[in-house]
Length: 312
Image (cartoon, rainbow, N blue to C red; front, side):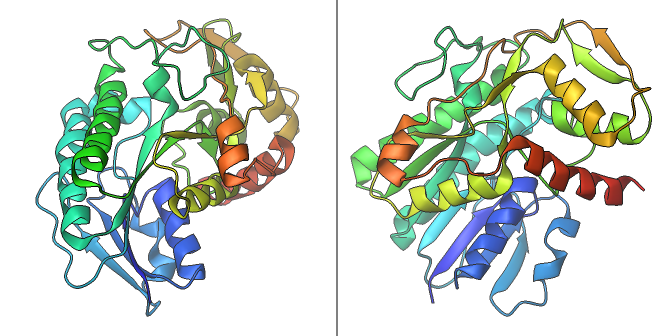
């Protein structure tokens, strides 16, 4: 039985990855320090014979006894509200944490996949963003702690690949949504759904003309699994290229909850907020045979049902 370590296991994406690898017949070690993750996301796995949980901060030395075949490094504060409040922890998990896990992968002769982000492109001047684009990032701006942590993580991962011949994979994740998102994580979708369910005005920053591309979590997990099992070591974008403005997205949420009385209010755009965000997924299609399948209408319906249960 193959063994996989998943860091950030109690988070939104990490918990779905734990489910997928259990389903695929792996022995799963979930690791999380719970500063943003929640045990509620993985409590259904605690009784499973092939799942074990370690409460640990990967910024400190990481030890896993016995064989280890794969590592997925998904530990990190990932939403602006988190990394703005925890800038140093964000930098440490991207640097020290990544170094510790690359060292573990080397010691165990394991293949490691690191979770990067579309944020490495910053406020992009190339649209849509392909993997060859180097980005437009403000290293000392408020988002820099997250952007640069991920850019450093990619550089360090490639260094281990080139110097030690380590089997590495890098996924650049674009906006993803679905059940188990935190209702208060500050991102557009959970904010809009929470406000709409509570009968509050939906808050749009700027004039709402900035764009995002939302990928349902099941599609993302499929892309990550295929990338891990592929032979490709350079970064790959995984996301849904179906682009929408934030204002249009807010209107979709209002229609979804069927409350025509809801209003949209506007506030100042945060510093360095990207104006456009859409992945070029050509590589994912060509190399992995992957593309997003779940359309936004269906994905939002599933996510709405989850949020209603959590917020009731």
